[in-house]
Structure formats: C-alpha cells, structure tokens
Length: 216
Image 1: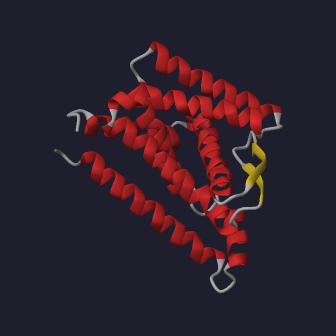
Image 2: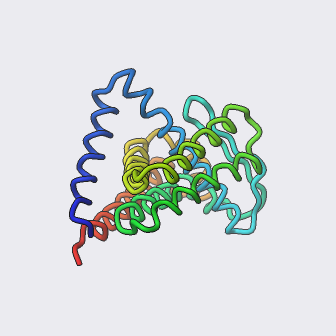
C-alpha cells in the first residue's frame, strides 16, 4: 500500500461530504456530473446483468434529473434488476480498488471507462442529453489520463464517491427496481429487499476498504 493512500481516502471523504452537506447550490453543481456518472454505473449494471444472462439491451437512458432507465429483452429478470444497485456498487468498488492499489492500471482503467461510455452512447442511447453527457464525460477522462498525473486520485474519487452516493441513496435510487424485484419474490416485500441490498453493498465496501488499507 502506498503510504499516502489513507490520506487520499480521508481527503476524498472530506471533499465529498463537504460538497454534499455544506456546498449548497455550488456544491450541487460540482457534484452533478458525479450524480450522472453514478446513474451511468447503475444503468450499466442493469445492461451487464442482461448481457451475462443471455439477454440484450434495447435502450439505455440517463435523464438530466439523475434518473435513468435501461430496457432489456430476455435474460434473467432477477439478476438484471439486482444489477442496477448491487452491480453499480461492485463497479464503484473496482474503480476505487484499482486507483488505491494498482497505480499502473489507473490510466488504462480510466481510458477503458471512457471508451465504454462512448460505446454505450452509440450502441444503446437515443436521448441527446444522455449522449452529450457520456461523450463529454469520456473526453474529460481521456484528457485526465493523457495530460495529467491525477488518474489515480480521480479513479479513487469516482469509485469512493460513487459507493457513498449509492449507500446514501439506498431508499430512493432503486425504488422501481425494488418494487419489480418484490413482484418476482412475492413472499418478501420491497422494503425488506431494500435493506438486504444495502447490507450486501456495505459488506462489499467494508471488505474492499479492508483490502485497500491492509499493509503488506
């Protein structure tokens, strides 16, 4: 572990909570692209769930208010629904881990994320706003990877801030997914699944933090 990893984590936490809790309107504007990025991870989790279970993606939307919608055909419905909340948390943890522990992978990873956003934009997205956001965000990532040495810190920030946003949004973000999930497993209501998913995400995050901060 790099000696400054813990300091970077603390700094990211300070910036994140400072902007979200005390930043007011300016903080909200600064964090707005991150909010849309979290939506991208959430919807990509749905898309990935469809693809790995033999389905296909019909449409992929990111709205200006931070909401999103992924339409799919075929695949395992339960995994597709769960892929949004838990899948996005896994992706966020992967980004955080690579930034913290695999410094040599940071630039390639940022480039892969940027390329992935462009591919998603051209393959599945029909909305002009969503296409514009995905391309603009990807260009920003490519510029960071090519022209700066901030790739590791940016990757850690994207991953950690995404995880924190997902945890804080547990009772709002996946509402429609939880309702649909409860229809599949009729015995267990949506509010129970909400806490089950939250516990899974917290365990994944705690496990990742333990690995990242472990010395040796």
